[in-house]
Length: 124
Image 1 (cartoon, one colour):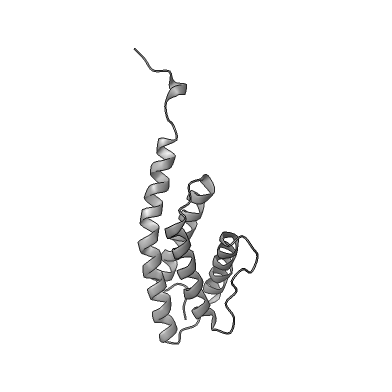
Image 2 (spheres, helix red, strand yellow):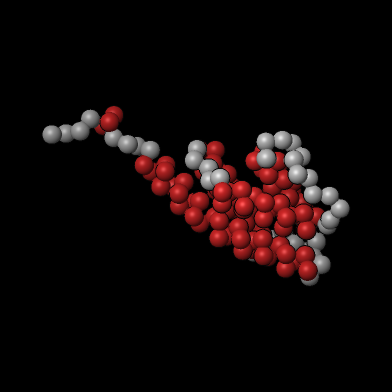
């Protein structure tokens, strides 16, 4: 007997993609935090891409905290701020994984950002 196509769980592919990106992203984010802290110790600075990335990451972090500018980190170098915000986003996603299409898009965006950090594309 054929099953009605409308009864099939078509969201299985979405859930698998979301889960795969979540589990790929978290270890990469942890490595990116280490890379940022190493760059900070070496007194490197953020280039233009790094500054733009920091602004986007701050926006993501503020949205996660549900208030613009929530938990602002003041009085530190931009690269220090990058590593601190990145660590906060990593901690948040570890405790509160995302389960919607916006979450999948965010995981993909963050993964591309982490790749750029790990390749040193944000530092001078």
